Image (spheres, helix red, strand yellow):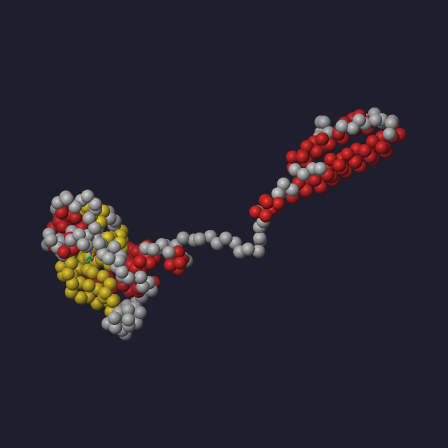
Length: 365
Ligand code: PHE
């Protein structure tokens, strides 16, 4: 540090100012700026503090005014040098590399945040569930790995029924050697949840069961080894086929629009008697006949029927109130993919499972 003599204080001030300017010019980092500030303006050890103690206070009375002015000028200079250095240090510390890498083009469009969406299958299932919830149905679930007993036997599939063949049913690996009745398999329909529900609660029952099912089917445009169903079961005193027709006609109108018509054809399912297939008037041509309905004006959409007394007999083993002489009921089951394909105009069932964002993006919003 420069020794401050008492003889030529004017010259000393000039030297001090030069020293401050030079020191400030060398400041490149925030840390150096702070050290410079402490060295000059620090309250205890700062140069200006020293100066005021060493010679302002000891100055002869006639010199005090002039020295005071010079002192203040020096202080103002140091402060403004500091301000400049602070401003500069904010912009330094950026290497050329950092400037290149971190350069920000504020004219670029912002990053688009991807917003998730309900999968069209989930959306269709939720829609169906909501329709039946509005009719007083509650939601039931059951396991996807199911026993042969629940999937087939208690649903009145006689032993040796073709649907039990391994070509339709995917048996869990290692279960093949067990007796057929004890085998675990991937459920081929949601109907086993009918029995699981009845075993848990006496009638009345109004339940809708959305779920995933599996069949050993070769994949093509309309078949997939994994797909989804929505099952329904309604059991109470005095339930009739008219109730079934009215319920499904209402549900199809709620799903596809009030102009949709339904018609019922005799069919067969082991667990319903009588059984029916339900067709709806073609939603693409309003029944006039087109490629989608093979010119018939009708599209087959679901299976249904009155619960077979043999099914109630199994339920009555755990819940005696399922006495087929006192109660009756109907059940229905529909394929969700088929409905979603119609609603959203999808021509390949595989699209639902491919996870292709270009397909799924269409369902955002
Ligand atoms: N479980 C049948 C199927 O998968 C559908 C169905 C359910 C039929 C309930 C009648 C009653 O094909």
